[in-house]
Length: 155
Image 1: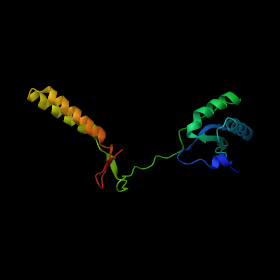
Image 2: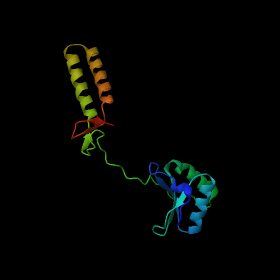
Image 3: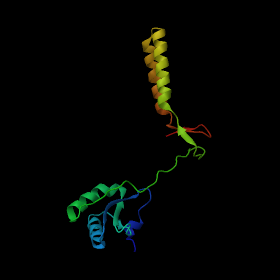
Image 4: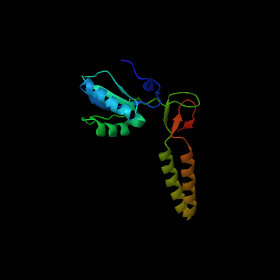
């Protein structure tokens, strides 16, 4: 089935989501027509398990649901998350995919406990507070992910 030109110009950076599904072709085409007339580019996918899915760009899903509720007899029966698989994380420096959490929370907890213990030991809670604050700033700047190959940290 040929796709309208507006649908062909959509990019994969904004994935499609299913806003409704119908068992009858006429109902699916009517929903697509209602969305198109509201300025939302829609596509009707081939029947899967005897249901035709009406899909729109992810950013228009909520507005599409509102349009379908207002303009069609059958309310949307399902709204799904974006049909996009999560990409594997890769290091921006060396493109390696062997990355792990940089464990910022554990590092902060360790420094905080040590700073409080030293601060109490030398009777300088102010010094402990400043050490904890400096550690928090440093760890917030540091990336959430660490590359096992090159040691780079990144978000």
